[in-house]
Length: 215
Image 1 (cartoon, rainbow, N blue to C red):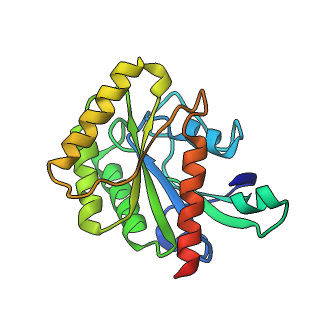
Image 2: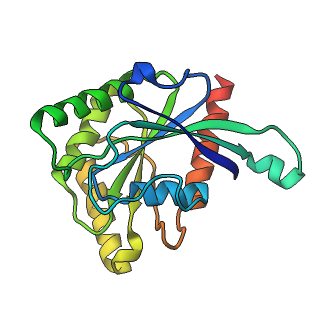
């Protein structure tokens, strides 16, 4: 897949106010400070598509971006259809300094979106590869399992640690999941700085769109 354009559309306080669900959608979610904005910018090859902040918790709404791209086959053949899909930037969890009431409002907004957004094909759940398995990440993954929401694990910030540490943390995370999961979800190891994992993410998105079109 070759990204041709990506543009901001709207920020919504509720899934009911999101754009009409008429094209495939992929959402990005994870702990605050996991590198979500940097990853989105890297994926779309734009420096300032998603705003990067030094203060966790700046994303507070459901942010929609419309992406157009050429599928892999048309890149090779020089022709073919254009794929349109929504990229969604969701508020993070874990570090934001907000009131308990605001936190509960965020949790409801996010859970409603994830469970009820009918065109959501997959959730990209971002995991910071610098750290060993975190309880809130595992708890949320188990919640996704209860909701039967398809997701892909994306390990971020691999350029911030040694390869040995990253490998251990990733393996430990997957091993922890195997304690309660019969089958593991797909996972991708990324670096926004070095653009590692970009092609794998784009191939995953394209494959999901193609599979959805066959149904």
